[in-house]
Structure formats: structure tokens, C-alpha cells
Length: 518
Image (cartoon, rainbow, N blue to C red; front, side, top):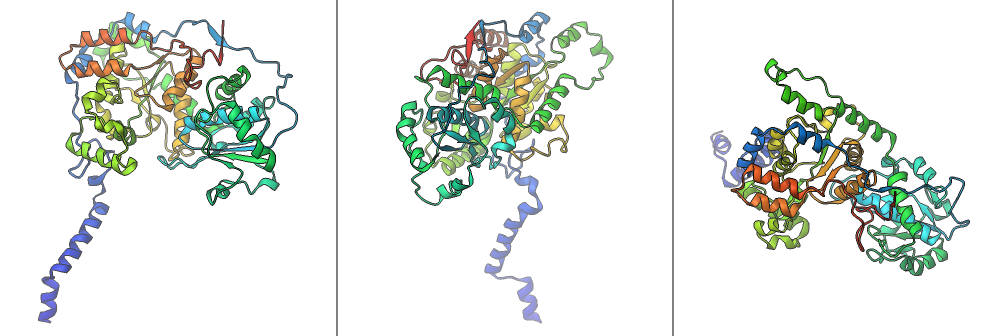
């Protein structure tokens, strides 16, 4: 018995080590909040970051105490004037440019997020037209970052897509039974003669006629993977360019439940519950006049500030040494150190305008442009690196900050929750209905909305990253000087039509390919 007690109360070294290991494994289970991945306003001692303090405190304090004039508010909310461009006239519905017969079936497999896949779909329709092929509804690959397996049919209204393009190109929902072997699984298990995986980036039309058409004619089907960015923007017939535009702006409508959720969000943004104000605030006529200018209006801010973006930028975002080490480790794990920007200092990257704007910086930009604390701001983003703590400064500037979760119930979001592409589609829909759109950093979502809103002549603010980086590096700059520089630097960055130049994307610059001069 004594030996048993000694063994029980005095474990040897190996037992102590085993108990310690078990404790380490189970500790996060019993205390998960201590290990939360950046989703809390107050980070724990085990977090990979420290809650960032405002990096531009003097500008922030000035912005919070400065009131915009009514005149300025009228100007900032004013819609864009007519710019002399319009949608090109539609061909008569009876007219069909779809040739009779088909050279075979063409499949494409599209990777990337929602907006990269949208571009791929537009290109797939154009390539089918070039080859006089029958297009099978494009297959959307599982997104490796967001792990979203949403299909074409789950995102886009297939019947609308087919109807809009029925006189342009032959499209089928799936291959006929004799070609059922040509599947994603078939191409994943070996080298197949019907798969084309050598399509160059921005390939000309002739490349498809010389390399894809013979395979399709021999086997009846050809599958192209990868396909993203595989069609040139230049030296194509006008009819092919117009077809890409038609797919982008007319054929690719979201499924009804996405549009309905988007419309619910828009209605709640435009018609918020009546706020109960105290008598002192209510009596200030100037404040009420300011509020009236933005009444029923809202701004969409696309804030792409996820960990992937933060790490790849190689910039310092004020989260301290722990954050720098965590992002460096993430870069090593994801890209094996192949991030060229990491060889530059933070200041060098900022001078070049290569750092994404933080929530604090985009808030200061909006305040300098004239938006006040009564502005309804809708946050379109998947995840913000640092969670609520990272956006707290933005919320101080714009307390009427909303997102999908603040405006809708879990039941209303049930069909899209946890599906990154569907959530992005909802944000895209809301962004297209907003009075003003602004994005904190370049990217596919930014480019797609800049393009679509230019096509619709809607105000869209494009931040000048180089200018803003230089302004934020100047720690002695006063608010009045900062605001003047911001206003001057963004006069011509609010949705003005810019003609596409050679090699530029038709999915960023819609004129002159997608538009006609009035």
C-alpha cells in the first residue's frame, strides 16, 4: 500500500512529462478564448498580435473634432454627371449570330475567387464563339483559401444565363452521355489527350484555333485547365469583345436568393430605424442639415484586410513584434519565402504605395473626403485581420458601420453562411446598389466593381495608394493640410471614365470595348 501511495503521489519524471503534455493539449479546449485567432477586441497573452493603437493619432483626433460643411456634403454625395458614354444599342432579338452546327464541346475549369471566376466565364463564352464550339457550363474549382465548393448553379441564375446568350453561342448544362467520361476526376488521375493545360496567359485567338480546335474535332471534346486569364484583351474582333461585355454585365445574374438577401440589406441601409436623439443634438440645425444630405444613402467599403493580404504585403500594421513574427511565419508556410516584397523595408514599400490601407487609414481618407459620422457605411469583407480591435478606429469615425451580420438575422443568412463565394456575391450586389463605392486595396473585387460601376456611371472612389502612403508617413502634417492634399489628389479618381489602353483588362476598363460614345 505504501508503495502504491508513493507511486500515486510522487510521479516519476516521465509521468510528469506526460501529464504536462496532456495539460498543454487540453488547455486550449477548456479555455478557447485565450487562443482565439484574432477575432476578439482584447487579445490574450497567447495571441499572435497586440491590439494596435491608432498610428495617426493627431489626424484621428482632428478628424473626430472637425465638422464637414453642408456645401461639402452636397458635393460629396452628388452623383456623377453624364460623361458622354452610353451602353451600346442591342441587336434585334430576332437576329442571331450563332452559327449552325458545332465543332464539339469545350470545358473549362476555373480557380480563384468569385470575381476571377466571373472573368473566366466571360472568356470561356468568347473562346467558345471563336471556336464555334458548344460550351459546357464552367466548372468552378474549390477555392484553396476559403475552401468554398459552390458550383456555377449555386451562384448564378443558369436559366437567365442561357436565355441572354441563346443567340450568341451554344451552351449546355452538362455533356451528353457519350462524353460523360470527360470529368474533373478523369483529368485529375492522369495525362489525357483531351486536356489542354498549356494555354498561355492572355493567349490570342489564333492560339485556340491552332491548338484547341484540332483536339476538339478529333475527340469531340476539349477541356482547358488552367483557364484563368487565358484570353488576350487586344487584337480581337469587336464582336468578341462585345460578347465578353454582354456576359459580364447582362448574363451573369446571381441566383434569386442572393439577390433577395442583397435587396434586404440595401433596404435596411436606406431605411434604418429612427434614431432617438437627445434634445441638445436635435436642436442643432446645422447637424440636422448635414444629416439630411446623406439621408437614405450609403457607402460601401470593400475592406480586404485578411491575414493572407496582410502577410503577402510584407508591411507593418502596428501589431508589434508578435504580429511581425506571425506574418513572417505565415509567409514562409504559404509561399515558402517566395514573397519578393519581404526584402524591402516597411517605409520603402509604403513610399511605393504597395501597402494595403488599414481600417484606420481608409477611415481617415473617407473623413478627409467629407464623409461625416452620420454616414451609413457598409463593410464588404470576408474577414478582417485583427477582428473588432483592428476596425475600432474606423468605427469611432463612422459609428453607423454595418455589415451582413449587423443588418440580418442568422436565419436570413442561412443559405450563404460559411460559403465565401455566396457571401462575396451578396456584397457585390449591395456594392452595385450603393451611392458610393470605395475599396481599401486593389484586387479582383475592386477591379470588377470599378468596371461595372463605370459601365453604369456610378460614383466609385479609387484611393491613390502612392499619395496616401506619403501623406501617412508625414507625422507632422496637420489635418487641414492632409485634407487639402486628399481632396486635390482624388478629384479625378471618383468614377471618371478612363479608356482602356493596350494590355489593360476589359474587366477593369469597360470603355471603349463595352460602351459607345453618346
